[in-house]
Each structure stands twice: as C-alpha cells, then as structure tokens.
Image (cartoon, rainbow, N blue to C red; front, side):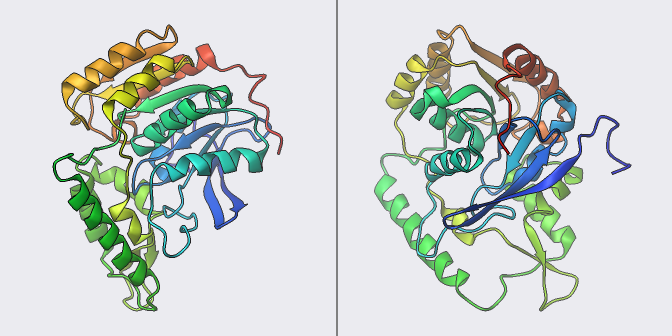
Length: 313
C-alpha cells in the first residue's frame, strides 16, 4: 500500500451470497455508511475503479462489485446466455440483501448503461446517477440483426460446453495477458492493466508461470441490450434524478452522433442533469482519473445527502 497515494482509502474484500452463488467486490472507506455503488464495464471488474475512488470524497464509502461472470463473482448457472439487462436484477437483489431502500450509482461503460436502465425502471430507488462514457449499448444493425443474434446464441452454447470441461482454458504469460488486454480494449494504458487483470486471471496449474482468464467465456457473446433509440428518448424525457454524464472526447461513440446529441438534448430538460466532456479514451477514469475526479467529487458534494447514506450492515 505504500506506493499508493496518501489519500488512499482502505478497502476490504466484499462477498454476499445470492441464489446462484455470490457477488464479490471491493468496499472502500467507512463501513457505517451506505456506499456509492460502482458498476464496471463489460469483461472488466471492480478493479477498474481502483485509481479513481481514492480521489473522490473521503467522507463517502464506495462499493465496486464484480458483475456475475466477471472478476471474483460466481458465474450465472450453466445453460444460460448473459444479457446485460439481467444485471439490473442483480443490482436489485444486492439492494435487498443489503437492506438498502435506495442507491447512488457510479457506472462506467456497460455499468453506466445498467445504472441508467435501473434508474428508468426504479426511479424511486435511485438518489443519483453518474455515467462515464456510455449512454447506450452497441446496437446490432437491423439489416443483419437476426443472423448476428443467432451467431451470439450459437457461440454462447459452445462457451457453455467449454465451461464444463475439466481442462483449463488456454494460458498465457503475464506479459501476453497485458498485451491482449491493451489490444482488445484499445483504451487501457499498459501500467493500468494490472488493476483489471488481478481479478480476471488465475495461475495455471498445468503450465507453471502462465495464467488463464477466469471470467466466464460466455461473456464474449453477451447480449448487451437491444433497445431502439426511440425508447431511450422516452427514458430521457422521464428521468428527473441528479444525473452526471461524462463523455470521453477521444473515444468513439456507440451510436450515430445525431442520435447521441438528440438524447443528450432531451436529458438537458432535466434541471438536475449535467453533461461534461473530458480529454481521454474510453477508460479515462482508469488512465487519467484526475480528468474526471474533480467533476465527480463536485457533483457528489452537491447532491449526496449524508443522512441517506447510512448502512444497515
């Protein structure tokens, strides 16, 4: 811990039982407070927030979870296909397990989308929402939708079969794992890769000195959400909670610029909505946390009611 910044919050490993196994995560800061719930992106894990959370208000607690199939959390049951909208149910189950009446959400990428969906479905259960660089999931083109979706299902069945094998998945040197993560993400700096990999790898017992990915292989073909633009426009017109959206200027959009701007314009009708743009790629919160920490801290200091953040642990 000595190499970490002086304002580093102490964290403890978190684990709670759920019907299909357990949800793991990292609890940062005080234990006598309901934490800000931090939700990570696709095939990442709770480690994605390791360098950002220490820069956020020290009087607040944060719980960064690993979604099912990611990090140290249990896989979903055999035979299932992962749908990102299922993670809305995961958040609701976690709330009930922790006996929280409401939550405050900090999300990146897929986690930001899940947070937005949750706020739309349960507006009375969300105090505030902070989204980093994802407004909507990537959409399959309507011209090839059915064929492409069929491919996702077929590939999921193959991955499900591999999960049942007694053989280890392919293994790699740690350097190769870093290079693969950098290549696939196209937005994580080399020195930040360990924050993700520490919860995504297991050491091989068959090939000493090598590692394999411990996340669920079915995640590669996850259904990330097939919701038309018009539905998001309705959502945007109805959202009235404090909502901070941070757009990374050096990252590609998941949708045409026109529809993105149209959705943001509708969200701006909410007097509690705030839109910010920062320099950085998609993982700006991990590579350059100082680019977003001040914006997030200011938003939290303005909208968090400390009396609401009382844990019932």
